[in-house]
Image (cartoon, rainbow, N blue to C red; front, top):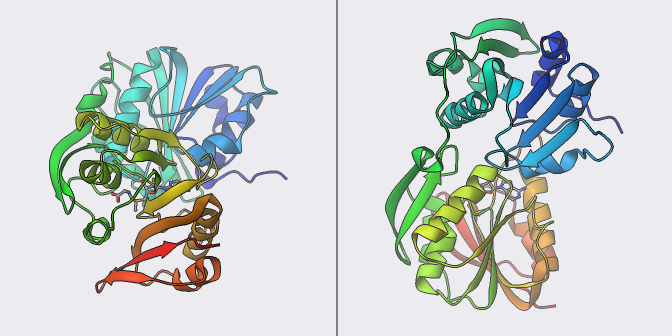
Length: 346
Ligand SMILES: C[S@@+](CC[C@H](N)C(=O)[O-])C[C@H]1O[C@@H](n2cnc3c(N)ncnc32)[C@H](O)[C@@H]1O
């Protein structure tokens, strides 16, 4: 089935003569086939996905001039004629991506930045660093803007520590160090939902999965209280995975961190799953997300395995939990959140 191009991708295609016969880097590409489609015009395309689902959507095997990566940076120092950035939701992340593009452009290389009008892409004008010339509005269509600019100076080499805020966090399980990279959930403070979950957490044992680990707040707090746990941390977002790795390292904790889209890339079964799960995902409804998370969780839990999550009290978790666990056990709640703690029995 043909995958429809997103609005920003359609705007890139409308302007594809800009990348004719060029070696192009596409940063933060979306849930479509734009990097592959661009090969109709460009000589060579490299895609860097920050979202693991987007990375999994496309395969590059049949395309010798297409290279795809998932991560917060490229694994090499290749220089490109042109870099395209999909403007991200978080403005601070945009600054990082602009630096990354600058680092991978040849002198005089072309920067294209595309984004939905309502997604804040206009901020680019004030955000553009001095090593690029002032961005010019190249196109305005499909509720999106496309800006063009040129590399006129030397972009600094990215050092991850320049993009991280490191701080001490008091959690109900003890004080930990958190390393939060730009754009990662809940910068600088303990999320209220996460706090309620950690305040009402029984001891866990064995192999535990932290689903949607973000900067690793739950992981670090758990390991502070129970360093012997075999903890695995997954997230769909490359910046979150890098943050969680930095957080574990900063606390001298041992845990495995890897990308997963939902629970799909986890292996084997767990004695426990803990999460402050995602509540929205582009077009997917919150009902689908919670349903998939609960039904996938029971497949991944050992018999007697425990499942501790916190969710906004308005999210439709109860019926699904009842269906798949045969019980709904709310162990704590306040006017915004509920903590569900269930055991997988069959
Ligand atoms: C509400 S945040 C919780 C972050 C962290 N656990 C905390 O409590 O601070 C949810 C996390 O789920 C991640 N996420 C969203 N969709 C996902 C998916 N399909 N698979 C895995 N992780 C996902 C997001 O990137 C985000 O880091």
